[in-house]
Length: 100
Image 1 (tube, rainbow, N blue to C red):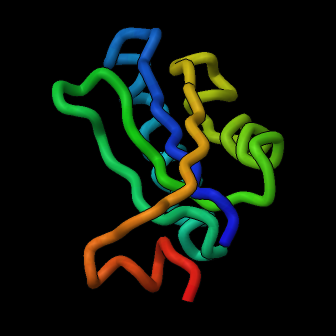
Image 2 (image 1 turned 180 degrees about the horizontal axis):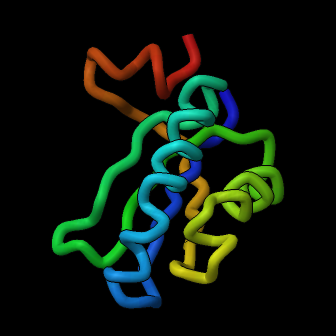
């Protein structure tokens, strides 16, 4: 199974600017969930950014995907991408993260 990629977004602009692009960001997320690319996403607590779990054929492919996020297109957040080869998972998550 290809690695999972953990994308950690950190806002670099004030929340007022972030909020102007939240609807476009959510639409972007929904599109990629529908395509089966994204696995999980959510806001960091406190609200300093977000986290996205995704699949991808390569780090370069994931980087290219994330560059299309409105938060990236408008320079609102930086992103750190961490490749993760899952070794163990809870019973209900094995089908998602581990080879059969």
